[in-house]
Length: 263
Image (cartoon, rainbow, N blue to C red; front, side, top):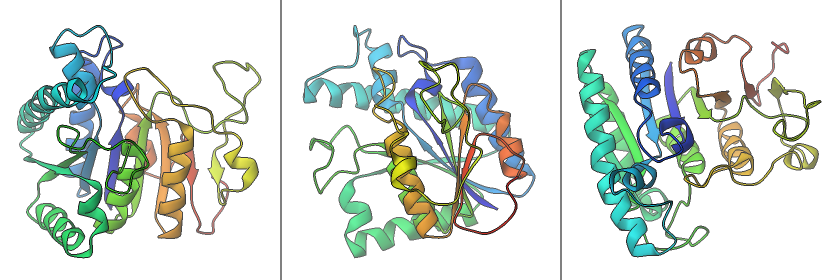
């Protein structure tokens, strides 16, 4: 399969903003093994600003745009150095692509982006994609930005003609209520339609270092389902869960517009 995997800042880093080395090593090892199985992998990785915060020893995620850009510039170097080194350990090549909203909205630039991603996959590389936070200055929701990487990962999945999008999160999937507040919350294993009732289950954004939340994941699921692409939310604390997701086992929450049994 052609698979897009999205990892969020809270999964990739510790609360300090510094890299979670053990988890990142396990992620790269698992992705490398999935490639060895014959799958094509695109990695959409958050974490540039968060890792820049740790690298620059800042007290937290900056609120002013110039410091956000500076943290992103520093963190992106750290992130790609880490991915390049870890994937190289398993004889795989990584490639960096930084995009802005215009790159996936303007037809000519979108075609160039699609061609680059697809050619990298043909050449056996692992594209590592992030929004170009070092130069993108518009706030979320402005036409020239994408805003957060849940949406970006769904756009990438559509552009790449992916079979599956897997979002690694700090939560197991979509629940009937917020499991951090309600002990009776139940994980929903399968969603075939995003109804107003499903949308009402989405909470607010997650950690202070990240920008996404369940609402952005549901927006990503809508894009994927409209394109006939399955999307799964799983807990990124154990990257080995990617094996179960790829094998079609019941893990996390799967969003699909296709038929089939509730498994």
